[in-house]
Length: 160
Image (cartoon, rainbow, N blue to C red; front, side, top):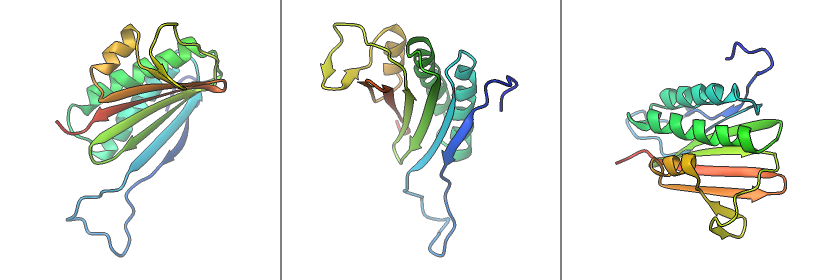
């Protein structure tokens, strides 16, 4: 997947539609699909995880227009994890339902949010210049900070 030998992303999982005795191709599949990837937290991981996400979106046949928003969201969230966490790796999890694509980025670093951002217990509303751009493309964006790392979840609409 990458020409950089020290950056070997590990595809964690990808659920695909299974064919079984009750499978009917004329009916829409209503289950949730997930895919994940883990890689080193380096600058080179940003384009690797962006390509991974876009490839998954293409395989899943997500609606036109999602690709650009997905690329931007993944680039910003992974870039923030690489720049601010100080952790050794970063994980990306994609989860698609009927109306949203959830993009989750998790690191195990010690990034601290800027003071003055609104909080609700362990949740921080997305903010900052890059995250403001993310907000323009998502329905919701939440940052969960804990001692063992940060998890950001952004939901991209799949329908207008």
